[in-house]
Image: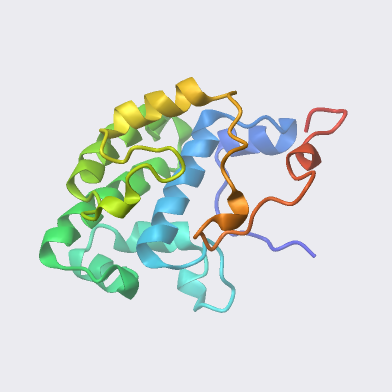
Length: 186
């Protein structure tokens, strides 16, 4: 059974549906929705919520510019203080730009990194326990961390034990990556 999502599809999304080709602007939209999920603690689609808020992106667009409504929508687990609300507002604005209806109005991911990088510097963890977790030096600026990840891409990282992770995300099952390939490239 398929759920119908009542959003007006722009020509770009129709092209994606017809051709199956995904572009970076679709990824940017998805990233914006993930930011919304992180800020609110809500799922992108939840049919158990009231009709006006079932679709997170559409609902978030209506409330993001109203500071009181935005503050009320923030996940209580974030324990928002006045000084953190400024950062949350910046992220909410970025999420709105990323989910713009027209793909050509969405920013590039480089812009998103430029918006988020100063916030990462501002909100680094204070304890030293995070340093060198899984070979990542969190004391480095974000752009240097990304550069290190890019340089490490393709190298053998088998020394990282995913079973010993403190993450709530389960380790990948055997054959996980292979399940995403098919003969027709989809």
